[in-house]
Length: 423
Picture 1 (tube, rainbow, N blue to C red):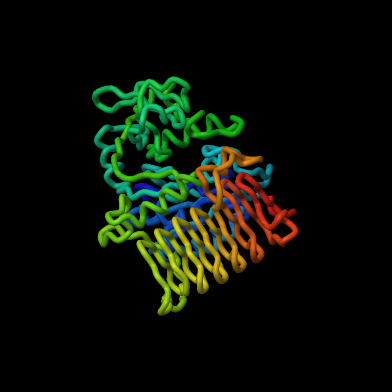
Picture 2: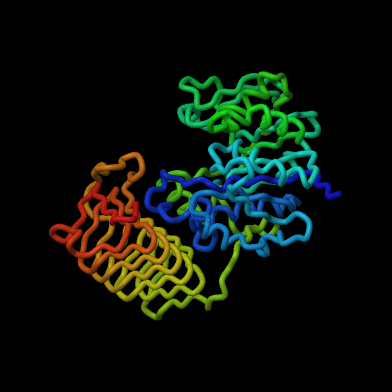
């Protein structure tokens, strides 16, 4: 009989709709990050660094890139005969076939996968946060408190607390109240969406709530366990943790990597972040190129000037280009004499010659002001921007655009161009 003390279930099926055109063709956990990684690399690396060698990755929305990236788990040392990493999409069952409809429903649909390992504990993780955490220490804390559930929580500014599930604790860190996104929070201790469950408690709750519509941990499972007098504790975490769910937080998290002393250090020997790397040549910096305070990926060729930016691998930045405060993801091509300011450019994008991105005053986005803001220009993958156009701030472009899409050769601030089939 296989027996694992703790297995991890990693929820990676979300669309990440607040990332707009960045996630129109790819699941949020598969979005590139830091010039070399994908967002899912962080929780996966945390697992193996914490000694957890059995991880189920639950996928759903646009899973192709994620599946290819994870493969059989070699980069994270998760290619095991027993355990290792398993990609778990929704599948057709004999009675019915259904999509995952909520975080807990997704876990419930994989009860059989978990049961084969006879775990004592199950760690539930999100696939879309940037942080380093030793889950083993959290497990020791769970055992020491004889807890049924331990919720990782971190202090947030009180004015932001209503965006999260908030926990109220007594002096022993036992949770006395749990509120999901409360209007008037009673505490600033926010749930991070990282849970350790004792297996029996998790299984009982999932089976009991199996008919609940869109069954979710924060809305249903935790309140159910709370109302049934389970011992629930908060494990306070004070390290770096970023939910990169919005374009501005995604941009900020990338920019923080290039600070002189980065808040989040990718270079620590003892806690490495692993990723799948392609066999590509080293970067090439031309004689007249200039780079200041930037991350440049492998196989990238720089002939222009780059300031304070994160550039992925296989990117070409031609002569006369000036890139500032921007993220350019893998295999994108920036043609001659183009100026790019505070932009997020997804993978495999082509930007023509003499283009200016991020010009003029800020204007509210005409269609999706909650998504496209903070003065950013966002360009979805496989997009093409033609020569000689100007693009304002708080804008989004997706698809192969031509000069006809830009009246007077410009997309003013707050504008949006999404070609058919690129919703």
